Length: 366
Image (cartoon, rainbow, N blue to C red; front, side, top):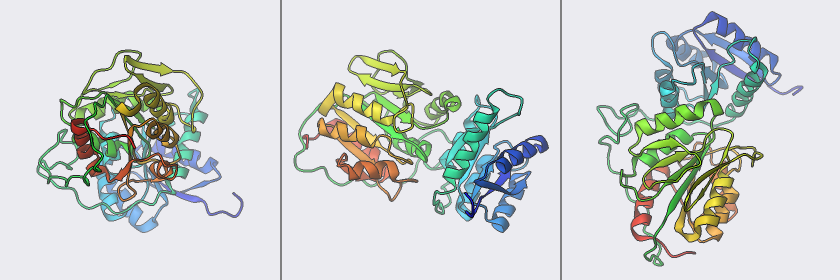
């Protein structure tokens, strides 16, 4: 990186010991430099305003206002890429709420140089800070209060204004029995998944298979959190039968495939650099369900899911890509569009309505 401008990182962390550790980790990476250290949420807000860092490394347990409130206020007043750095992988309520509010990623805190995997965890943190610093975040409007749908942490669908229905289906609509729904998401995915799943009723007639790119230590907590803030029951996928109206999240470091009789977890090489991979899930749906499957590819960096979604469309499935107007990063859905793998593009707030329309009417294969 000789001659290249380094990425300026603001560390928000109240522990002096961890402050020093993170400063060391960042200083050892030639791509990064330390812009400053904030010991509280209030100090972080002031320093972002004055320093204008490229990316923020955010602890979630802070004196005063917590990491969720910091995220919400930064995304409203001074949008900047935020990477949540969490030490306790068992309690993910606050970091997941931070992702819902606009943080881009959650990674494990290095903890101590004495731990066996210190170098691996430190490298992953630096890589995520580098990647997320390139994301062009936009200002988010203030969220409704008093129990409205978008109010963070209320755990239900709320009383937000009704979302307009998606455009009418083409005239080729016919009755068809859909049997499975697959969804893949990456950066920005947790918030998008909440919006989508909150729009589905508890009697949704299909099993829902989800691949979300997130660090393996966080997957179980992510699935638990997702089940607490959306109407459908959510569990980690396993080698077991699946049930309608249940959401199955692919576990860390295993591919998920689906078939009419159940699910199967597969040990295999990463696909598109990912394990679990959306390509693997979508291709299995294409093979097992053909035109009776629905595939949805949401926000994310890279190309995972795009080729699998194209396989689904070639098999006659109905495929949806999140529109660039709402995707935090449009790379994954945009690649699927370029490959011809998308039946239609929709903003995230219209996807659930389309899914409900599809399972009640169905469409003719195109």
